[in-house]
Length: 173
Image (cartoon, rainbow, N blue to C red; front, side):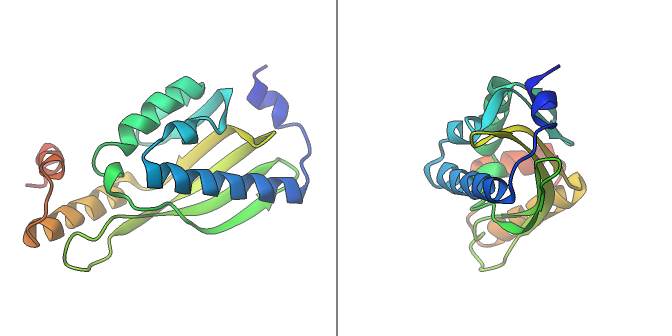
């Protein structure tokens, strides 16, 4: 039995779950602001699971670390400015926090707004740590949004080379 399986059988108070989720959000804000995505990985137990429907499953904090650093330091993740929760709900019985996370991109140079969102399910493990995160979304919506952002940035004269290469690789150029 993994640590994640064991912690899912515990009962957490609403106050503890709310506090842990506030800590999660503050950590994501700090990781985004500083570019230090180690902060994000450190919120998970050593044997945590991260279920990412487009990229696959990651087992353990170090696999999560490797994936999140690679993903968030390259386009389009590197051009997302914040990851605020539009809403969240607490499942005290399971120790879960379920929320919608917005993923806005930086201004492409013309003032337009480009963003997509995902549903995130967090399993709490205690002591401010999470044993599982699952992100559920439509990858085609993210792809379409990022392509539109690239076209807007190109029209504004500010398409970075990395984004141009990405757009070419995904068949958008």
